[in-house]
Amino acid sequence: PSVQALCLWAIWAAIPPARCFTEAEINAVIQARHLFGDHALLRRELFNQGLMSRTPDCRDYRRIEQAPPAEALALIRRV
Image (cartoon, rainbow, N blue to C red; front, side):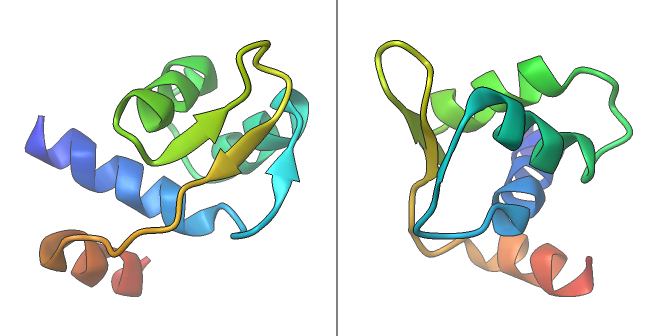
């Protein structure tokens, strides 16, 4: 789980801040940053972990601005 959380932070860092995305747009951002093969699972986990918000109808997604933990910040700088 700790490695998974770090990977989510790396994907979070690739999402441009202060922008609203459609589901298709956020899927494209996520797909470009992983080899896992399940962008929908990653999208849901970004939301579940509080790294991304979405409207109740799941039409608009937005990165939630926050300071990554030190370990995640180190990974983000490397990727």
